Amino acid sequence: MDITWNSDQKVIKPLAIFMHGYKGFKNWGAFDLMAESFAHAGLPFLKFNFSHNGTSTELPMEFSDLEAFGANTLSIELDDLETVLHAVESDVFSGFDNIVARQEFFLIGFSRAGANAIIQASRDSRIKKLVTWNAVPDFAWRWQNKQEMKDWKEKGVRFEKNTRTGQVMPLYYSIVQDYFDNISSYEVLRQAQLVYQPWLVVHARDDEAVPFKSGLILSELNSNAVFYPVENSWHTFGTSHPHTEVELPTAFQQVVDQTILFLNS
Image (tube, rainbow, N blue to C red; front, side):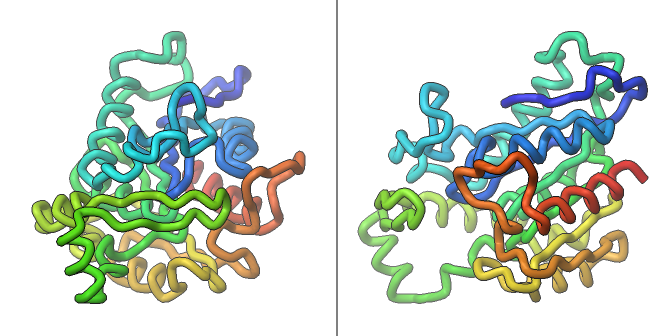
């Protein structure tokens, strides 16, 4: 994990914690520029790699550990987030007491991690505000083909191609089993109704990965939610990896600006 902050900051703020999406990592695309934008706006910003996202400490921007990627589960990701929260509370980043509130957090989840963020916020009083970007409304929404699921369960693994890297990546059936073993806590639409914090729901109208209606559904479930649609941005808000520009794409800048406005209000 890494933290970005403005050394001139004079006000103690909750730490904004960002969670990357599926087949992502903390330094993907324009995420480093994103962190700088939040820090310049007076919001110390932490992002981290999930332990089973397929990268490693030696190769943090490559999917070099496909075995870990395949063995990932929602429970593992939520445990990772809890580890991060505990680390900050335990002062893993020394010297930040003058800018970071130790037990207050803003949580930002992108894509699949948006659902993680919803679940965490619904049960954690340390989360003071919630932001979801193009969040999935259900972990099982792509598990509807009965024959595919039967084959996956029998074989114990299925394979997905990473269109960016060309890698064929394993995904073990344990992720499905973990979801249904914890269904009472992991049903996103049910947990979304329990979120009591102020919540900004951001979704791209032309999202090719998670339908636009998903954001509408989430926002309509909770009176604390504010909905912000994004135009002409696709699922990743106009950014890709690697990002070689010195500025954020226009759509992504709008998302970042709106999120900063929400968190600072």
